[in-house]
Image (cartoon, rainbow, N blue to C red; front, side, top):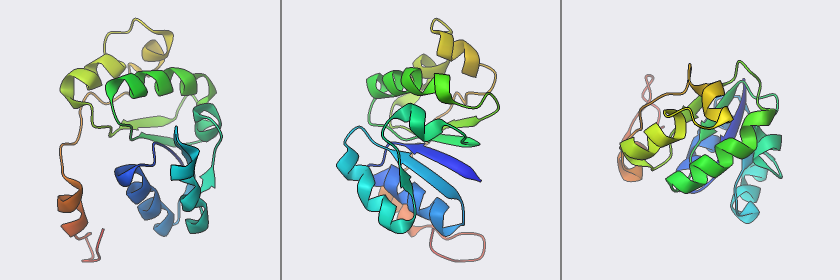
Length: 140
Protein backbone atom coordinates (compact mmCIF):
# COMPACT_ATOMS: atom_id res chain seq x y z
CA UNK A 1 0.00 0.00 0.00
CA UNK A 2 1.23 3.53 -0.77
CA UNK A 3 1.06 5.67 2.38
CA UNK A 4 1.88 9.36 2.81
CA UNK A 5 2.84 10.57 6.27
CA UNK A 6 2.56 14.32 6.80
CA UNK A 7 4.55 15.15 9.91
CA UNK A 8 7.58 13.18 11.07
CA UNK A 9 8.02 14.22 14.66
CA UNK A 10 8.23 11.56 17.35
CA UNK A 11 4.85 10.02 16.58
CA UNK A 12 4.93 10.41 12.78
CA UNK A 13 8.45 8.97 12.50
CA UNK A 14 7.47 5.98 14.63
CA UNK A 15 4.35 5.35 12.58
CA UNK A 16 6.37 5.67 9.36
CA UNK A 17 8.91 3.10 10.52
CA UNK A 18 6.15 0.70 11.57
CA UNK A 19 4.50 1.05 8.15
CA UNK A 20 7.84 0.42 6.42
CA UNK A 21 8.49 -2.69 8.55
CA UNK A 22 5.06 -3.96 7.55
CA UNK A 23 6.08 -3.70 3.88
CA UNK A 24 4.19 -0.57 2.85
CA UNK A 25 5.61 2.05 0.51
CA UNK A 26 5.90 5.25 2.54
CA UNK A 27 6.42 8.82 1.37
CA UNK A 28 7.07 11.32 4.19
CA UNK A 29 7.03 15.09 4.48
CA UNK A 30 7.80 17.43 7.35
CA UNK A 31 7.88 21.23 7.61
CA UNK A 32 11.46 20.87 8.81
CA UNK A 33 12.96 18.63 6.13
CA UNK A 34 15.83 17.53 8.39
CA UNK A 35 13.31 15.68 10.59
CA UNK A 36 12.07 13.62 7.63
CA UNK A 37 15.45 12.85 6.06
CA UNK A 38 16.55 10.10 8.53
CA UNK A 39 13.53 8.05 7.41
CA UNK A 40 15.12 7.68 3.97
CA UNK A 41 17.65 5.29 5.54
CA UNK A 42 14.69 3.14 6.65
CA UNK A 43 13.27 3.05 3.12
CA UNK A 44 10.89 6.02 3.04
CA UNK A 45 10.85 8.51 0.20
CA UNK A 46 11.22 12.07 1.46
CA UNK A 47 8.90 14.51 -0.36
CA UNK A 48 9.62 18.19 -0.85
CA UNK A 49 6.03 19.34 -0.29
CA UNK A 50 2.75 18.07 1.16
CA UNK A 51 1.34 17.82 -2.36
CA UNK A 52 4.25 15.71 -3.54
CA UNK A 53 3.87 13.45 -0.50
CA UNK A 54 0.18 12.69 -1.07
CA UNK A 55 0.32 12.29 -4.86
CA UNK A 56 -0.64 8.67 -5.61
CA UNK A 57 -1.11 7.70 -1.95
CA UNK A 58 -3.91 5.34 -1.02
CA UNK A 59 -3.71 6.46 2.60
CA UNK A 60 -2.65 9.83 3.99
CA UNK A 61 -1.69 9.95 7.65
CA UNK A 62 -1.67 13.46 9.16
CA UNK A 63 0.49 13.72 12.30
CA UNK A 64 1.13 17.40 12.93
CA UNK A 65 1.75 19.61 15.97
CA UNK A 66 -1.30 21.88 16.13
CA UNK A 67 -4.55 22.88 14.45
CA UNK A 68 -2.98 25.73 12.46
CA UNK A 69 -0.43 23.34 10.94
CA UNK A 70 -3.13 20.79 10.11
CA UNK A 71 -5.32 23.38 8.38
CA UNK A 72 -2.38 24.77 6.40
CA UNK A 73 -1.05 21.39 5.31
CA UNK A 74 -4.46 19.92 4.41
CA UNK A 75 -5.16 22.93 2.20
CA UNK A 76 -1.74 22.58 0.54
CA UNK A 77 -2.00 18.83 0.00
CA UNK A 78 -5.61 18.32 -0.95
CA UNK A 79 -5.33 19.32 -4.61
CA UNK A 80 -2.72 16.62 -5.24
CA UNK A 81 -4.47 13.76 -3.47
CA UNK A 82 -6.25 10.91 -5.15
CA UNK A 83 -10.05 11.31 -4.84
CA UNK A 84 -10.37 7.89 -3.19
CA UNK A 85 -7.47 8.34 -0.75
CA UNK A 86 -8.28 7.62 2.89
CA UNK A 87 -7.17 10.42 5.23
CA UNK A 88 -6.36 9.61 8.86
CA UNK A 89 -5.99 12.50 11.30
CA UNK A 90 -3.68 11.62 14.21
CA UNK A 91 -2.40 15.08 15.09
CA UNK A 92 -2.38 16.39 18.64
CA UNK A 93 -5.20 18.86 18.07
CA UNK A 94 -8.00 17.66 20.34
CA UNK A 95 -11.71 17.49 19.51
CA UNK A 96 -12.12 21.17 18.61
CA UNK A 97 -9.18 21.12 16.21
CA UNK A 98 -10.43 17.92 14.65
CA UNK A 99 -13.84 19.45 14.00
CA UNK A 100 -12.18 22.56 12.52
CA UNK A 101 -10.02 20.45 10.25
CA UNK A 102 -12.88 18.56 8.69
CA UNK A 103 -16.21 19.70 9.95
CA UNK A 104 -17.45 23.16 9.01
CA UNK A 105 -17.10 22.81 5.22
CA UNK A 106 -16.13 26.45 4.64
CA UNK A 107 -13.00 25.60 2.68
CA UNK A 108 -13.08 23.72 -0.65
CA UNK A 109 -10.71 21.05 0.65
CA UNK A 110 -13.03 20.45 3.64
CA UNK A 111 -15.93 19.87 1.26
CA UNK A 112 -13.85 17.29 -0.59
CA UNK A 113 -13.02 15.36 2.58
CA UNK A 114 -16.35 15.74 4.39
CA UNK A 115 -17.68 12.28 3.53
CA UNK A 116 -14.63 10.38 4.72
CA UNK A 117 -12.64 12.57 7.08
CA UNK A 118 -12.67 11.03 10.56
CA UNK A 119 -14.02 13.31 13.27
CA UNK A 120 -12.07 11.60 16.04
CA UNK A 121 -8.57 11.87 17.48
CA UNK A 122 -6.41 9.47 19.41
CA UNK A 123 -5.43 10.48 22.94
CA UNK A 124 -2.55 8.19 23.87
CA UNK A 125 0.91 8.85 25.17
CA UNK A 126 3.93 7.81 23.15
CA UNK A 127 5.26 5.81 26.11
CA UNK A 128 1.97 3.89 26.35
CA UNK A 129 2.05 3.08 22.64
CA UNK A 130 5.66 1.86 22.87
CA UNK A 131 4.59 -0.68 25.53
CA UNK A 132 1.91 -2.27 23.37
CA UNK A 133 2.20 -5.58 21.56
CA UNK A 134 0.68 -6.49 18.22
CA UNK A 135 -1.75 -9.40 17.65
CA UNK A 136 1.14 -11.87 17.35
CA UNK A 137 2.89 -10.51 20.44
CA UNK A 138 5.58 -8.48 18.72
CA UNK A 139 6.46 -4.98 19.91
CA UNK A 140 4.56 -2.30 17.98
